[in-house]
Every structure is written in C-alpha cells, then in structure tokens.
Image (cartoon, rainbow, N blue to C red; front, side, top):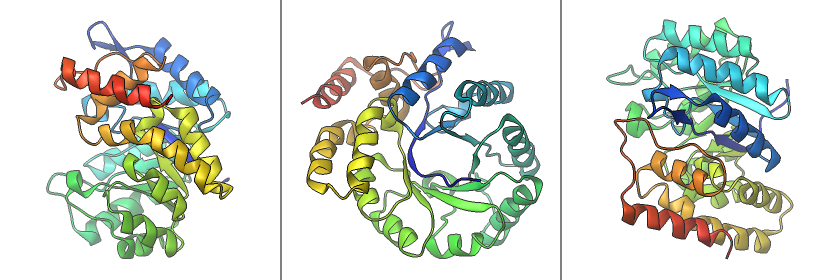
Length: 290
C-alpha cells in the first residue's frame, strides 16, 4: 500500500434545500475540481466537512460517493471517529469497504479516557481493519493530547501510520517529523513552516479555496526552491490566517464559493458570516491573485 503524502483537502460538504439534504451533484463536482487543481488527497467527513452536524447515513453516503467519484485518481481519507469504540470500528469497516486509503480517527472525546484507554480504542480499530489509521490530534476539542512521545508509542500498533496534528504548535511538527513520524500539519497558518520542517503533508482547509496554490507551495518546497515558495506563501497567508481567526467552516465555504466550488452555507447551528466578515474573506481571496 502506497504512502500518503502531499496536499490533503478536507472537502466541504455542500447542502441544498436550506441545508436539509446533501447536494451530491455539487460534492462530486467539487471533488473533480480539487483533483484537476492538483491535490493529492481528499478527506471526507472531516471537521471542515461539518461531521458533527451530519447524520450517520449522510456520512456513509459521502464516503461511498467520494471513493466512487475519485476512482483511484487521488487518495481518499475518511474520518471515522466516534465516542464509542464499537461505532468507530464499524465506521472504519465501512470506510475500508468503500476503498478508503486511510481512516482518520480522533481519540474518544467528551470526558474521554487517558493514554491507556485511547491506546485501547486505536488497537480495537487496528485489529478490525487493514486500512492505515491516521491519528487526529486536536486536544482543544478532545481534551487528550497525542504528544510526540505518546504517538511514538501508539506507532507500535500495527496500522497506526500517520498523525494529523492540529495543536497549532510548530514545535510539534518539527519534533514529530524529527522522530520519523509521518505527520500532516492540520493548522493552515503553519503550512509553509511545516513543509520546510519535514511534514509528510498538509491537511489544509484552505485547499477548498486555493488548491492549485497549495499544490504549488508543496512542489516548490519539495524542490528546495524556497524563495519562490515564500512568494506563493505570502499570497496564501491571508486566507490561511483568516480561517483560524473567524469561524473556520463558514470562511472555508465562503472562500470555496468565491473560487468556483459551490458549497453554500453551513448547516445550522453554525450561522452565516456577517457582511463585514464576508468582506474579509473577499479580501483574502483577492490576495491570492496579487
């Protein structure tokens, strides 16, 4: 099984009928557009895909549609997280059956377990599937921090191959990469730093807005053309920072709409951006062409 690396875009979930149902036609069109713009991996049912506000049948439909639509053109990562281990196992089995190249799994959240329990959670998933697992570290939401030291121990589990780190701590990327872990940067405003310091890839919500530019950033850093990469990064910085300043998903969706991949509004209870906030997104999108 080939390694995952490069630009991974957690794709937005488009809705129709006032967010009452999925817009599968738009979802498929956006998959095609992201692939045409050079992304290496598409992630489904991620945070940027609004997974907390999707019903289980919707998540499974999106996983099935994505794998079928991608049809081997790029890699597919499916988030299969659940608080109950049994549910995470079943979600992961379904993703494997769809043809996912990896599953993305949070530690059990909301008063979840400590290290021993989190390890047990991952072990149960690992014995149930053959598909690689990407641990998802975002302790601000899970209240459990997969530190580099803990991930090194978790990597002893057959099947734990990658980590997405969303701590917004640049030293984490550096240390994880330095110890040989295959780390994906999950914080957009650290993308350039992460690549320069050895990240295997970027898990980038801003890829919904600027997929071709992020792919270009990846290529330039890989070829050690750092001056050119820095110029690309300066154009990406406004949208990358704005995602982490304003509510993340509304910014990603507004930027996606503005750059031709129609996704509409977030599903409530996440409200639309204000007029002033929309103007900030417009300015950040305009900076991409400066």
